[in-house]
Picture 1 (cartoon, rainbow, N blue to C red):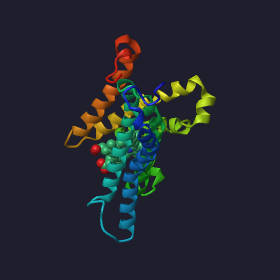
Picture 2 (picture 1 turned 135 degrees about the horizontal axis):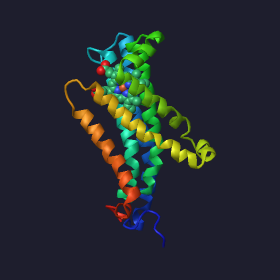
Picture 3 (picture 1 turned 90 degrees about the horizontal axis):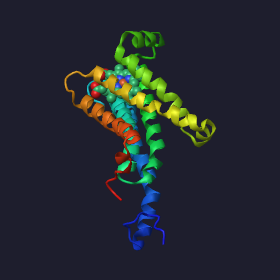
Picture 4 (picture 1 turned 90 degrees about the vertical axis):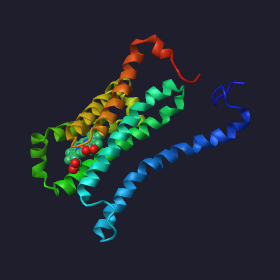
Length: 224
Ligand code: HEM
């Protein structure tokens, strides 16, 4: 019988794996939402005079946390293609859109925090910040490039754009590089995050290049 669950899974475990398949997507959805929910709760408490969850500089804390989650999820979305091939798990593709959209959601929150808590909704300062601070110029460019990707991530847009959808969505690679440059530019004391994010981005983009040109890489998989 053709084994839909993969070659090494005994038939008796099928119901368990079906349940896992059913539960795993909502679980990932909730896990991605938790940091935003926690930050919103912190903002609510700060405004209502409750406990301070956001530290001595809440605006900076919110900016750093939303930025960190944005780049983590962007890199996680880049990791899906290499992991899908290396682990021989096509089902991983089911998470790519959700994780990519969450990355955009956190970038959007990051922008809101910047406009609200750092600029106090002073829109006249936005142009000045973008033109005078290179790391903001780069971050803003990444946000602008991510916007059409988020807007066309749905099935209808994918069908309408056909082959161009894939071409358009290669912009993710430029966004990830810009996001890493943005973080490297901000480095104050520790290079850890910058090296980690930059290194992971290089590995995941490098894998795609190698896979395109090397038949050996195309055939290579850690799990059969
Ligand atoms: C809309 C455009 C953007 C603006 C205006 C912006 C602005 C900022 C600012 C002001 C900070 C510094 C916070 C502080 O130290 O007080 C920051 C940090 C950060 N941003 Fe952005 N950003 C933008 C886009 C992005 C994008 C697209 C990403 C990633 C996908 C990102 C990821 C980060 C990260 C990870 C940090 C923390 C860096 C660190 O650890 O020091 N930002 N951003």
